[in-house]
Image 1 (cartoon, rainbow over the protein chains, first blue to last red):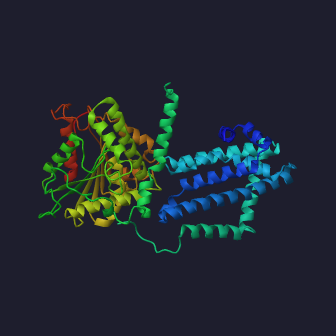
Image 2: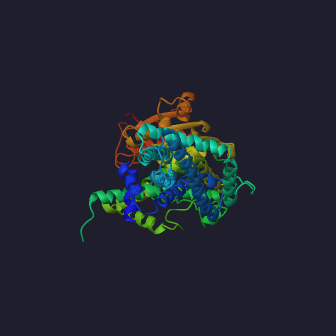
Image 3: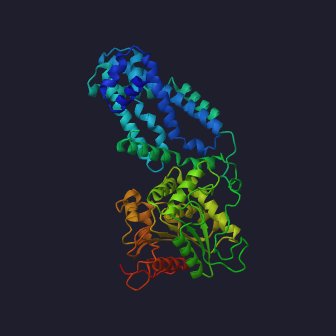
Length: 200
Length: 330
């Protein structure tokens, strides 16, 4: 537990050593990285939950939807990780097990563990931008460390991975994306109840 | 037992502040989602009890034409819709006397569910303890009472937030409307929302909904208002932003909310100024609160009036719809 906290703190401090330590560990590191992503996704979903409240979901459905959104966030992360892994391999000949990419780049999502604070009135919106930039920097460092790339190459690998995952989501992955949206709507129970103008 | 170091305490306080901030919109959002029941009436047995000293103190409709209807939205120190602050109670009483044809109603603006902080809430004990501290006048007690201010500041920011404002402000407008209707308001005429400090933000937020729902000419009077460039500025027929030359808090708000920067010419604040519907007036050498504050009866201006008198005179004149306000020289 202490080691996990140290790794997260290191990632928050944008310390490359945190990512190296994780990659050198014998623990199931890809599970750890993915757990960070799912928890970050849950926190971020809570931070951005105003839409769920606006849709008047019940407390039970609200919690269930947060879990679904966290898993969808994890799924989209995996799509990006696979794409970045492929781009790094093809463009820079950087071979590394996919599990390592999931581990290190998953850990790089640690800043988004604070995503729930996006709920904070007035300050939440700029905070979301700060968290996005913070996460982006951590992802670039994690990518560079994982593949042994220079930071410029890491930028290209990460951006290329993002573009490729976007392309996949809009082509062969489109049915999966649609299914994810339907699942979210089903769990939230939205889109089938009559709308109301507000409590009286 | 070793004492924790100050850095650790400051960190804990900061985290507590951030957590309180993150949780602050939940009451509003939960209300909107119907998590507390479907109606506001279910939430409190007597949300609209008449304030002490209120003319026609019962809820019977007035037998005469009321002009103007005035809603007083108190500052961030409040725990209930009836103010506990003696000076503020005197101000409301003075407004009632100065507006014999009008009706002055108090609303607790920091809860869309109209629940007093000391009422039926999970943390009611904490707020009662903080209120006792605030009223005790002791230094430690005052610090505890500051928790109430912090809690209500977050609600002001909920109103100012573009994500939550539409929910919060609609809820406040509903509360105001219910309070007014119970006192015989049928719509039309002049409706003046007086907001003190953070209450001004809440007043501005509610203004568009009230204008739309009532057909009244809605005017907003901000006393040392801490408010953003709320779209309500464009819905209010007139907004008076009254401040004292020593009130640094309201001046600070001008910097804290980017929409009020002169650079952003298209913001509601600057558009309202350009249209002449937002009128900023310095009423005297007053501070925001406390000694030399707007409600200080011991400090006097050159013409012999106390700061309290100046504030009451200016508010009453603005509520009457006068365009030249009896301000004091600074």
